[in-house]
Every structure is written in C-alpha cells, then in structure tokens.
Image (cartoon, rainbow, N blue to C red; front, side, top):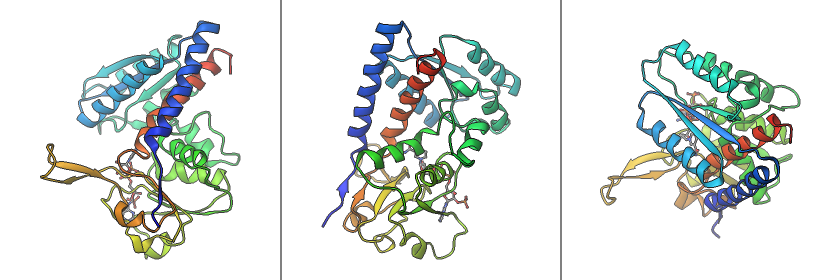
Length: 294
Ligand code: NDP
C-alpha cells in the first residue's frame, strides 16, 4: 500500500483563504488593515526570493506589506534602529527580519529589538524561551514548525502519547518543532549529527520530522511501517534533464518511503507552502491583538 500524500499546497491555500476572509472582515468592521514589514539585509538571492514571495502573498490576502532593504554592510545600529522605527509604526503589526543576517551582525540583538507583540516570526529570544518553558506559550511560534503541527492537525493525526523523532536541532526548525510536539504531549527524541545509530532511533518514530538538509537521507528501511513522515528538507540535486539543471528533493527518499509510511509530505508542495501561510496567520493575530480586537 502507498502512503496518503499530504497536500501542503492545498492546506496552505485553505489557510490563506481563511486569513483573507478575516482580513476583509477586519477592514470592513474595524477599518484595520494588518501590516507586515520585512527587513532584508544584503543581497542573498534565496533570501530575496523568500521576501518577495512573502510580500506577494500578503498582497493576495489584503495584508499591507512594507519591504525594508538595507545594504549588506549595514551596521548593527542601523538595522536595530530600523526595527525600532517599525516598532513605533502604527500601520505595522508584524516585523520579520529575514535570516540569516550577514556575519558581522549580532542576530540575537537584532531579534531582541523587535517588539514582542510584533514578533510574527517567533524568533525573539523571549518567545523562543517561552516555547521552552513550562506551559510552552509564546506570543508567536516560528512559522515552519507551526505549519508542521497545523498539517498534522488538519489531516487528523493524533499527536498525544505518540513517539515523535525529530531529525535536526536548528533554531529555525528542529528545536522549535520539538517543543511544539512536546506541548502536544508527544514523546520526543531529537537527533543531530552526533546521534549514534540514527537508523535505529528513526525507526521508533510514529511521527518523523526530517529537517537536516541532506538529500534523501532517510531511506525506506529506516521508517516504521505506517509512520507519519514530514519532510522539511529542501535540497537541490543536479538534474540535466530539467531546464534549470536541478530539481528539489527532501531529506526523505520519497518514492520508497511512501510505500512504508501512512502519510508523507512531498517536496516541493508539502511543508514549504505552510511556512508563509502561518506567517500570514500570525500577522492577522498580531493585528487583532494590537488593535484590541483579539
Ligand atoms: P540547519 O543546517 O540549521 O540544521 C540541520 C540539522 O541537521 C542540524 O541540527 C544538524 O546537526 C543536523 N544534521 C545535519 N547532518 C546530519 C546527519 N548526517 N545526521 C544527523 N543529523 C544531521 O538546517 P535547518 O534546520 O535550517 O533546515 C533543514 C532543512 O529544512 C534544509 O533543507 C532547509 O532548506 C529546510 N527548510 C525548509 C523550510 C520550509 O519552509 N519548508 C524552512 C526552513 C528550512 P548538528 O546540530 O549536530 O549540526
């Protein structure tokens, strides 16, 4: 039997429609237009693409978006003062600093400068800290991890009491998704590059989250029959048959693992589209809270 494919694109589109309808109501009934500011430092092409996509999606749902672009050699003070100005801007409800920042900048200090109420990316150290503390209740949780939980909820996968294995411990995906799964009472194992006998550990997973950035590392014989497999990885592999010379694959060997799993996300079209959908949702929540409506 083959796994059910989790259609992240369709689920993200549904969330986008929900956000769009709420944004329209907010405008009609309260004359409030949610606003998102993106801060991009330098000219990293991938970051530029992500920021453009976020701005386009904002436009589609009626969220006002402002793009702040700073040169790659911008000073710490310049970046922080931009963020502070956005904190004070009444038309902006969410602030997103596109990561990674250039090496000379202190990322934690920049993220700490964001008003907690506007931290729609959930990377302010206080929000990350709250995620790790009892109650696990940040004002905002990071978008990709929230998107993963949303996918599990929308396909009706029970999380409580299940054995979840998270491959990867990054600040952006691995660690926060582990905390969110813990909040939902899963039993968590977090793996990383020093984990011994990875295959044996992964095989325990009822729910497997792969976020390592290694093309198709998780093979079919690593996966427990009927596991739910969420593949976060986005990796380019050479493919001369494609016009652009490469194709995107995940961290999971999709074609073989889908024969073992009960549910699996494809790459692309799985977790990826959820990230922006959750950002839009967070911006709407921020606007409602700041305007005293939520
Ligand atoms: P990082 O490089 O920050 O973290 C990778 C993690 O994987 C680290 O914890 C690392 O361990 C671990 N790791 C690396 N190699 C191995 C290995 N051979 N065995 C076991 N563990 C290993 O990556 P990110 O978390 O930022 O991203 C992971 C993937 O997800 C990437 O492909 C990225 O493109 C994708 N991504 C997708 C998003 C989306 O919207 N769909 C959003 C964000 C990321 P250690 O800590 O020991 O170094």
